[in-house]
Amino acid sequence: MFDIERWQEIFETISKNKLRTFLTGISVASGIFILVVLLGIGQGMQNGIASEFKGDAENILYIWTGVTTKEYKGLNPGRRITMRNEDFDYTVEAHKDELEYKSSIYRIWNGTVNFGNESGSYRVEGVMPDYQFLENESILQGRYINEQDLESFEKYAVLGKKVKDDLFKGDKDPIGEYVQISGINFKVIGVFSDPAGEREESRVFLPLSTAQRVFGGYDEIRNLSFTLEQEETFEGALAASERFSAELENYLKEKHTIAPDDNSAVSINNSLENAKRFYDLIEMIRLFFWGVGICTIVAGIVGVSNIMLIIVKERTKEIGVRKALGAEPISIIGMVLHESIFVTTIAGFAGLIFSLALLEFVGPLIETQYISNPSVNFNVAISTVFILIVAGALAGFFPARRAAKIKPIVALRDE
Image 1 (cartoon, rainbow, N blue to C red):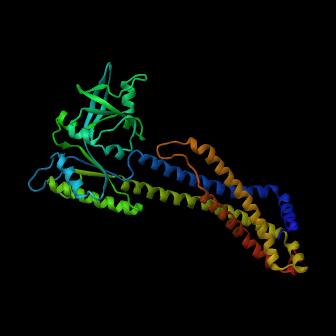
Image 2 (spheres, rainbow, N blue to C red; image 1 turned 60 degrees about the vertical axis):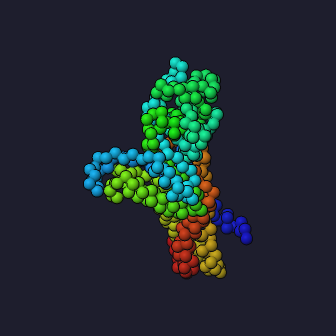
Image 3 (spheres, helix red, strand yellow; image 1 turned 60 degrees about the horizontal axis):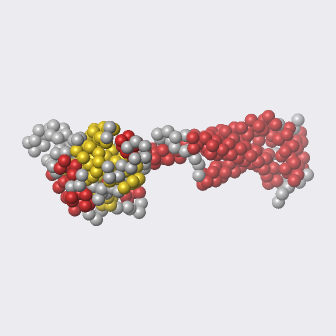
């Protein structure tokens, strides 16, 4: 029930101690402000990390080989391991029910690409049709490589947007034109964009079979790339990818006579494992931010509690008169709690509003490599409101209990 006299008392007390109340409110508001801003930064870090992974499929695995570093079965270290088409074919056949997208890659670094008077050095790769989905690429013009291109050894090329912009000036349509790659003519059939930006768009894709034949690769491949079928949970997807990685690594090491503990000869980059490490780190940072924010709020609560103790001391005689006239202890407790909750809630909401406004207007402007658009969702805002209410109650509880225990005769003697 709304008690106007109670509110009049609260505002009268506040008006008599404006500076004290203001400074107390600042301590509470700053606690909420710091907490919300820190949580916003934590969310921004998660957004930034997520954007780092968006350039490729979420559950992609890259496999490449290097040089052996250990003697094994009479073979000296220092051997360069080369994967071949049969390694890809075996993997696809052995795991055909698990794989979603798949491609082997024959990579040609610093391939010179010419069109007319324009030329540039780009990364040229022979790939398979699924590579478009492994890299999350979008076709802007024409089409991507297909199975028929592989079977027919077509001399076709798909250009990255940056390559197209560099070689084809103005509005010239590259589709159907011929570019020279290391002196050999290839017909342009498509232009792609990549969410990772110019670095990934500085590439030219050829049919894998054509690249191997034209550039002397025979049946050699530089990389394997796979995604697995989707799982219901992140944990399930991670377990499946780890199992697949282990089986593939064991196969390659056995097939190419590599020591089981030689970690340099076969390397597997599992995007889900990388994501889990980053997200675990972010979760730890978020918990740390919660701790810092709550400790700041606790400091504000202590300040409010101390102020309420002072107020109770100043109003000892008044409390004694109230009790002498029949006021129940619960009404005394309610009086003190009401004022405490009011001060902390108003101050807390002020801190909350300022912090949300800061994130709303400044957050979208923050775009660094690992922090993107810091923000706080509605559930977190509701959580801070709950913290405010609990904080106000805690701040006033002990002073209220002390006020309720004051004996009227003692209070009336107080000077």
